[in-house]
Amino acid sequence: MPRQYDLQSALLPQGWARNVLVTVSDEGFISALDAGPTAPPSGAERVGGIVVPGMANAHSHAFQRAMAGNTEYRLSARDSFWTWRRAMYALANRIEAEDLQILAAQLFIEMLKSGYTTAAEFHYLHRRRDGAPYAGTNALWDAIGNAAGIAGIGLTFLPTLYQCSDFGGQPLRADQARFAMDTDAFLRAIEERHGMQRGGQIQRIGAAFHSLRAVPLDHLREAALALRSIDADMPVHIHVAEQVLEVKACQRETGRRPIELLLDSGLLTPHWCLIHATHATFEELKGLAAAAATVCLSISTEANLGDGLFDTARFLKAGGRLCIGSDSQSTVSPAEELRWLEYQQRLRKKRRAVLATHTESHVGTRLWRDAAQHGAQAIGQPAGTIEIGRRADWLVLDPAHPSLVGAAAGTALDHVLFAGADAAIRDVMVAGRWVIKDRHHAAEESVGPRFAALMNRFAAIE
Ligand SMILES: [Zn+2]
Image 1 (tube, rainbow, N blue to C red):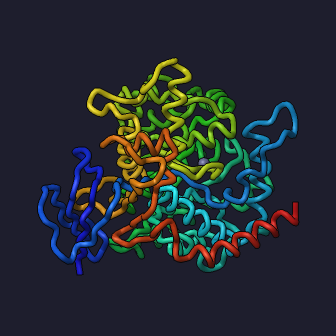
Image 2 (cartoon, rainbow, N blue to C red; image 1 turned 45 degrees about the vertical axis):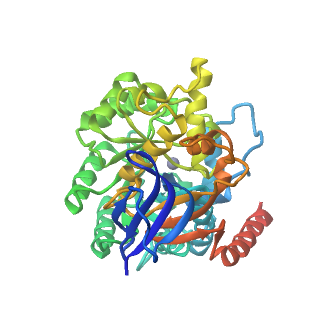
């Protein structure tokens, strides 16, 4: 039976509206929406509060949840992304499939509570701990899907091709052995999972290339074209230009910068999402905007790893499509990612409200609305806006929360980004199902203790 919801206040594509009647189908899609001031039918559920679209988390490595907060000390005067990566590999080589499921379930519940209603999992753990491939079904892949099922979060699963340790086809190192997969096995496994996919499901399959240093360009091209023949709309993600060293190595090897190389390949479409793109020239930013590909930033991770600053203002001005991700999980908060998109610009330009526009003067509304919409594009899920044909994925903010009381109409998302009102997220719906009600998730009592036991076990090994 379709259900009806009488929303007190909601952010629709055309702006803020009051008393919105929404009909949600059995499959969890919005089938009718009436923003007029009509009397709601008696069977409609009243949703008292401020309803905003759920956010897409376009870039996550679930296993790194176990590292958050554990690498914030000085090893040497030259600590960097590359020294952090050694600790990350040590963790990656310790995790069993059942550990991954617990970590991911805990993480996905945390994501829902903070406002992410879908996640793209960029997954490169493919083999057993001893480096051998799984004989039948891949338990590490299944762990992610199972965890998303426990949490009830939308998932775009991105098996990731990872074949080399550096440009020039350098072989993988011993501590990268679990990431190895040849192109044929990669494509077969994705095609098989794609064949099992049914319309209306909140989990779907995409694909990723770890980076240009990890996948030679000819392999990347061959696989990208094959993926397109499996599914012309398949989301394809890649880490790119995160580190200056990586840009320099790419130039040395190919004579081109990494984003230049991707633009020249002619492969980029609106289904591609470039992760980080930190060290991009203005020409490259314009090229990405023209290709209508998305760029996913995770400022919390980029700051944590000392990557550098992406030029958000220029990219948006060029018409670029930006979305966000929690990446290394040092922060799992869309509000924090978006806040720092703006703050980074304010610090650089010594001005305020840099990322507001003539048509949307509220920074919070602008950034949340656009990131939700472009995030949904990036991960290939029919979400991101509250309108007919989209999935009913939304958050309800409690207007009585101290962070929101007295807030002027239309400023709720400004409060979420700049006044701590992400703490006012009270209820969360995914595909027409309440997964968080009064800040509580039905599985948190079962997942929490298992997560705690796992973290204590990891701590004991340190
Ligand atoms: Zn990443």
